[in-house]
Each structure stands twice: as C-alpha cells, then as structure tokens.
Amino acid sequence: GGCVDIGVAAVEKLLETWRRRWPSDALDPPEVWERVVAVRRVALEAFSTLAPVTVARSAVVIELLAREQGETYLRAAKGIMRAGEPTLAQNFLSKAKDHVSHRAKLKLAPAYETWRYQKALFKIALARAEAPGAFNIYGSRDAPEAAHAVALNKSLLQMLLIQKKGLLEGFPIESAEAASIVGRLASALEPLIAHLGPVAASDASQLAALAFENFAHAVALTSGEAMSASMGAAAAGCASPASVSARRAAKASLRLALYCDDVLKARDAVAAARRGRHLLLRTSPPPLGRVVTRMAGSSLHSSATRSS
Figure (cartoon, rainbow, N blue to C red):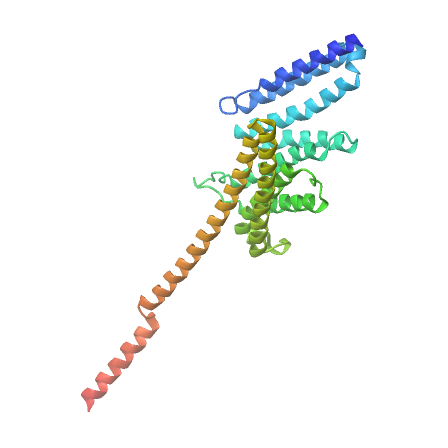
C-alpha cells in the first residue's frame, strides 16, 4: 500500500517534469528530439526492470507509462515537424497512432484521446501539401500537385469517414476541430482536383460546398461552446476557460472569413480574366490571313481600274 503509493507519486512527478522539459521547437534540430525520445524510452525500460515489482506492475503505473509513451511520440512529432522534418515527424506520429489504436481496441483510450493523434496526422498532410516543391536540377522548384492531390484526397476521405461514423459525437471541441480540418482539406484539394482524374470522388464545386459547410459548422460548434464556457465562468467567478473558448471561436470564425475572402478573390480574378480576353478580341488586329485576302483584293481592283 504505502510503498506503491510512494512509487506512483515518484513516477507521476518524473513524468510531469519530462512534460515541461522538451527541446526548443525553433532552436534545436530534429536529432535532439530523437535523442530525447530514445533516452526516455531507455529510462522507462530500466524502471520497469529495476523498480519493485509491486510498483512497476501496479495498474496505475502501467496506465501512466502507457499514456506517456503515446504522449512522447506525439510531442516529439510536433517538435520535429516545426523543425522542418515532416517525413520524420510522420514516422513518429505513425508510432503514436499505432500505440493509441492498440489502447483503443482494449477500451483504454476514449475517442477524444485517439482524435489528438489523428488530428496531428491530418495536419502534417496539410503542411506537406502547402509546402513548396523541392528544387530540381534546373534550379527551379518542382510542383508536385499530383502527389499532393492524392494525399489530400486520402486524408479527406478518412476525415469524412470519421464524421460519418459519429466518432466524435458528444465532444464539441473535437468535432469543431474535425470540421475545420475537413474544410481545410477540401479547400486545399479544390484547385488540384484535376490531377486526380477519374478517381476523384468530388468535383471542384462539391469541394467548395464541403469546405464552406464545415468551416461554418466549426463556427457554430465553437460559438456554442464559448457561450456555455462564458456562462459557466461567470457563475464560478473565473474567466480562464471562457477566454480559451472565445479564442477558439474567434479562430474558427477567422478561418471561415478567410475562406470566403479567397472564394471572392478567385471569382473576381476569373471575371477580370474574361473581361481582359473580351477586350483583347475587340482591340486586336485582324488575323494575318484576313489581311492578306484584303491586300490581294485591293491589288486586283487597282489592276482592273488601270486596264480600263
């Protein structure tokens, strides 16, 4: 009893310290993140071997270490992604997702916990699609739109399946995040849809409608959650939860506004291009064939006049 409680408290304190001590997202290279993850893994393996059996095999400690393993992979993946290594970050996230999926099968990970890992994977797919292409041998950047379109389409179908199954029902914050990601995926895929060819499940207009619908849904969910948090904070006399919810609602509203602004700009650009083509047709000189025909006709007319 007492020995186990002391051991659990020590493990909790260690893990809490680790969560506060991570490399810098901006200053440290990906290799540092890899080393930290490796050292912590070795340390936990040593703990499982050297700690008293009653502590190491207690249900509380096993659950703490299992959750920490997934959290470690997830945090490292985010740091490595910000350090500019999306491929390595995706490898870490795949490990994290496999870990949490196993916990979900054992009914140990609720839907909102699983969603955190799925969300990170979808964000990496978006970041890779939005990143500029690599430099080719001619010194210019390649434009891998086709590969991006396939990756975005796959992620979008997975997200739509999550929504269809209702896996996040009852979790308004997570549902709003899912709706926002669906909107971002659909809007990113819309200009690339031609690269999918016959395998495309939607056309550009359907993707535009899907993006707007989900951005608006995210606004509705976050606004409702912000209102509830504000009322609860007012009753409790604190403002922190309300301010977090308000920022979340403002972010969702900003995404919707930016998307609508992009749609209007695209329509204005198309209209301007059409006006420019129409004006060019009206002011451009006649085709060369028509000029030659006119010159030939004029020459024949002059010859006939002189001979008469």
